Amino acid sequence: MTGGNGNLYLPMGPATNILLMTINYSHDIATALLAVSGIAMLMLWKSYPATADAATERYFISAYRGITRVAKDSLYWILLAGVPRIVFYMDYEWSDLAGDHQIIAVIIKHILMFLLVGTGVYSWMKLSRRVKALHEKQQTPA
Image 1 (cartoon, helix red, strand yellow):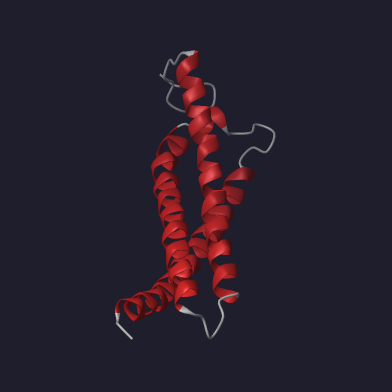
Image 2: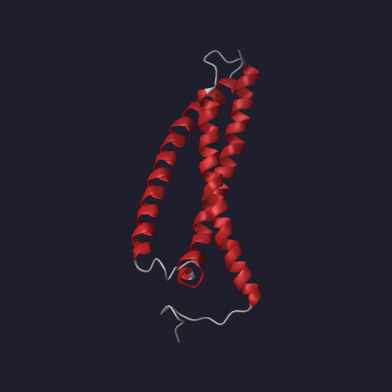
């Protein structure tokens, strides 16, 4: 049994519809949080003084851990919430006005997002090595 767009029709009540829309919106919010986490970490690192004292190093390590937690949780939610978003795309996001042209737009959007996330992960890995060195320095008695 298929719906008007040719996709699988699942009879759902208003509560399920609202839940799915909320998941879709939260997916977008998680994407924004991931991007902002990366920007915040970059800004924090760029303003990190070359001759930081121990208190500044501890603050930076703590901020790095907190921002990393937000970024990881955002990425996990993006992956998790992406599943129902894909499954119910035709029901909740398909635009008849854009027709098949939106397929190309969605593909381009996801290529760009994968490139951005990949670049962010690579940069975060480099930064994590620096933070690990700072943390080890903090653990070493002077």
